[in-house]
Image (cartoon, rainbow, N blue to C red; front, side):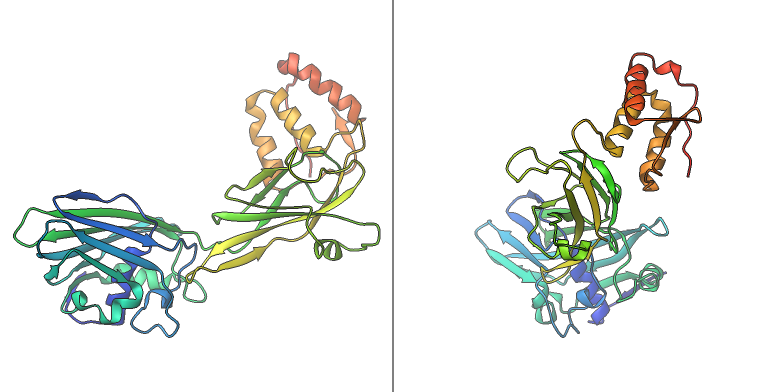
Amino acid sequence: MTLHSRARTGMAAAAFCAILLFPPSTARSQGGINVSTVASPVNILSISDVDFLNATTPKLLFTITITNTTGHIVPAVMTVRANVYLAGSQTTYDGVIVLTTRAFALGPSLIVTNLDIGGAHLLKDSLYEKNSAAISDIQRTALPGRALPAGTYTFSVTVTEVGGMQSSSDEFAFTLTNPTRVDLLFPVDGDQNANLLPLFQWQFDGYRSRLLVFEQLPNQASLEETASGIPQLSVETSANSYAYPSSGVRSLEPGETYVWFVEGLVATSGGSDLLLRSPLRSFTVASPGMSSLSTILDDLERALDPKYKPVFDAIRADRMSPSGGLRVNGTPVTQADLLRLIQLFRTNPDAVLSLEMEE
């Protein structure tokens, strides 16, 4: 059921403020009115973050700028419509909040931030249309700490001249993922034959990660002690994988052991990052002539028919590690034997009738 209210409540103001929590985009304008927005990128937002009237430690989250280049004062109204898609329930709510401000006099420019909401003159006597059922569902599915549920929040903002033809509209979409952990995939823990240029892979639902690699020195007895030193590689990336560079950093050495982990960088309100640290893992670079498990898997996958791809995907997804022995048709083989077979499969992939994995 849709409710209509003129009450200036914290919930109403908070819902209005949510319209601006999005990255900048190019506004579409007609005439001399233009709307532009600058917002802080975030992965997590709590309900208290957007309850601006009651916030005890307000943080700058957005700036909205309305410009008027007509050369005269224009009476205008701003209408905001919010649609929400909740990832958990896969439910879409249209018109969660529709805000129409009272008419206000728009001079050459008007700037409003979330810190101004409590005293913003144009918000007084505004008309709010609220989808109470949608708001109730969103509040009910809030995470511990009152974090807004994961999903896509899409908002349209329109400023229109009263009694005129000029208007400017902009649409924003922001995805909250609420990441809580980082899982490492490759190299597998304890790999004794890693590549000189390994491809690091991990799982993280956020937008940015930091990969750190440390060389384990002879006097360092634990992974924790190694990871407390100066990293040999520290790099920030927006992907969930990173290949060790062939130049620009100190090379990995055959026979040496290294410790690595990944920090998930979760953007929170206020501009700070929450660090989600993965467990520590180690690997040893292969001696000359040896190949790593991940390299063998990659070579074998490329050599075989694409129909076996789900098997390799399952191996990586389950983070399986070698048991210490290699078998083909039940017969133990050496790594050199397996590499020769892979070369044979490249020329005759139909020679493989089936492929299974054992846990």
